[in-house]
Amino acid sequence: MRRIICRYSYVMLTVAAMALAGCEKRADAPPLVLKAPDPAEFRAKVGWRTEPVVFNGKRYDVAWRRTVPGSFVVRISSPGRRLGSTKEDERIMREVAGAAIRHFNCKSSQRARVTLMRAVRGRWEMLVRCR
Image 1: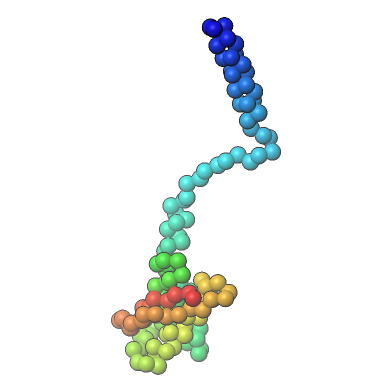
Image 2: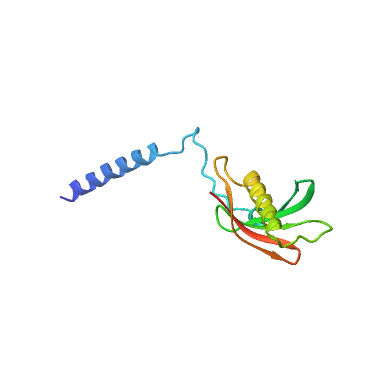
């Protein structure tokens, strides 16, 4: 009986060795490399981005940052002058923010929609979503 068990163990060892030999690394397979994200790259993606926008002959500085996918906090200011808080100013700021976010961030079939906005100390702040 002992002799049979020893014989089977040699057979099992041989089968296991042959199976492992078939699993050796292929030369054409690319190596698996896991790379941690660069913190500076992450900060650059979540930080503020500013672009100059000319609308009706006036220059505006539009700054935005991504809050959640498809949503952006937008600040609009104008160098050298304070922005008003009338209904006409609100309409212009809505168009400027929508055009800037649509151009720089939304996919080609999406539109930018201003959901919240307020005038603060001569500039406008708003929440814009791509839809």
